[in-house]
Length: 398
Length: 91
Image 1 (tube, one colour):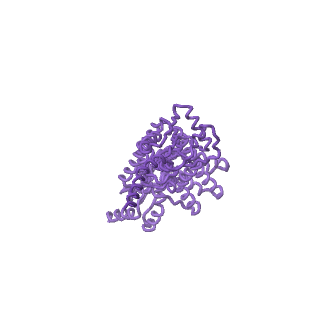
Image 2: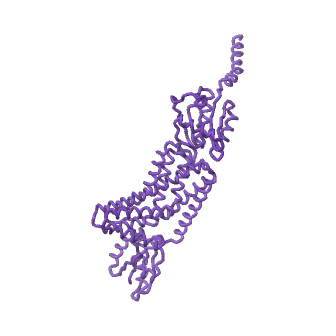
């Protein structure tokens, strides 16, 4: 009986010690956040960190606002240089061996996991070493692990899905837009009249390549603009969201009109502009000088696709904005834009190659183009609303 | 009866209709099909008030009077039903 008593008292004492031990074991966790007072993601992250701090009193938040303080901005630049992080944007979070740029549900879950882990395990504070002037070149900081994130497409793993899928969807829908298809069909018809097969192929491929280049230039320029402005001017995101909603309205309205009208066919718009383009095509497809013909085709591609961009600018603008919000690296940007443009041109490529091989133009029925207005309109509506109310939901990839 | 067809080289809807029309020509060898290009035959486009949606098929009688018309892409059945309707009306 005595032994049981002693055992009982021994176990009881554990209960008193344990909390103290766990309180002592809770190590201090330093979390550094570089933020800008104009950046909506930063505000969302600060709100989350304050809430996290109520649950983890050992969490030590060290915040640097970089918009008003030049000193803080230079410090961030210096730290990113030393840690070889080439992304200039905020919020920029460093905790232990990891860093995050941007903020959303996935980052939120990642930070909480790290705080929890470092509350009990040792962590290296690279920022403290940098502030003390120590050499940190030996240290390789890692991008924070993101498990699952919730986006408008539901709970998904960012590693597998996201921007590539969006590139394909938006590129395909944008490509279905009939604005420039008529030019390609007319060009192919004119190419059929040419005897010289090599020239035929050269002019056709040049037209398609130049079309891709126009889109590429536009999207890169817009992306740099969006990256620069979106992260600093909040109302610009709202403005783009509104433009997207207007684009959505136009697209959905033209779908409803085409459904009401029952007849679907080729809408003949702007005769004078059309005639100008038709005459240009006739001119350089009958041009003796191959060089002049090539220049003519390139000029045509640039002018036609500039019109096409205006006709469907909503989708490329939205797509590049989503890239800007996701802070993707330059290399990733090139990949996503190439995917977008490939799927944008895919219907043109099919029509061109089938026509050149069969000498018979197979076109896509206009009955389908009205659905591209509907789908494009719905996607623009969704992205427009998210741009205004929940931009962080558009963050897919890291 | 004659059928006036208004197309354009660049119109994908017109291209989609081409094989359908060829089949119908075989079915009705005695109907005359006359093709007009929207960009080249402007006079006829204005005369028959073709509008801004093509392809357009206008069915006319021996006195060149319009009987009916079909606007936009149509299925083979829709065209045949229209022709049969006109033929039955005449008889």
